[in-house]
Length: 379
Image (cartoon, rainbow, N blue to C red; front, side, top):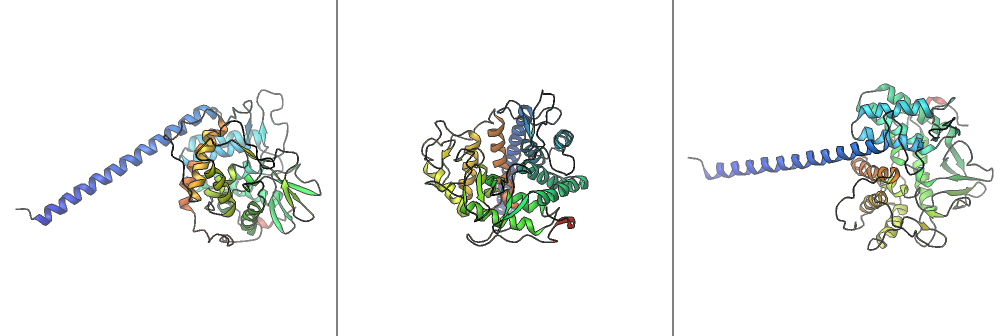
């Protein structure tokens, strides 16, 4: 005769088994859904040869998009697509003389890469994806290439301006002699941390520390938001929205809260002010942009990609996320679709990061091996 106690334990074991099966089933369903979205993204934006197509912008390709494609391929464990994107990028956008990449490729013209200048965010994402893929798939060649790119980012794209270490947006055109122009959305601290593993340098920690300070100080308008482009005076460090660009928190700057949340700094002062702006507009139409001088907002709503970034950032800043009618379908536009999937990647990556300091304290130092990888001097 089975005892009451044994019978009870048996029922508990059976219930535990059913619960475990249900959890596993939900996880498998979520993974299948994620893979389906990735397949749809590839079908819409990744050509057979590995070119990532910006259909918002006459079908051109950017090093940014190639970097996004590589990051997504690694995240979704798709080495075949990763290799195709990488091969096309190296073949068509690689630069002579350094490991960086030309910023734009224009199809169907005699010279597709007419401007050899780089875009630093593209190079950061390419190197970041290569470093992670090198570990995940045991590819030392990927890690070596990531190291080369990271080394040249430090060698060629870091400037010291009035005591602050700045990341230049590109090699040419951003230093007038009197001021430099930077893009706040290029400060992807999670990439700095990753690349410190393949190109160890104290500069990555400096870029993180001073980047957080820059984002704290470079806030404008009623809501204290970062601009898409920022001018930094080389004589006194004074900052203002770049004069040759619209003074907006817009398509570029929306990546600031995305990358802060992804990097584990979703509660910092800069991220909180953005979260407060979004939380205040949560009950109505979320504007696609806001003018930091006039306060005027876009006459049209934000894309589903921007909404996905908002929801991730609000959660990271411990703000209430607006109720929605379920996740929006993958947008048909390259940038909106990329932002939506990158928000998913960032949400998944936060759990991998070390504990962050209390708000207001300096960031946790990263392991340092040398001041400059390979002993190369900064120019």
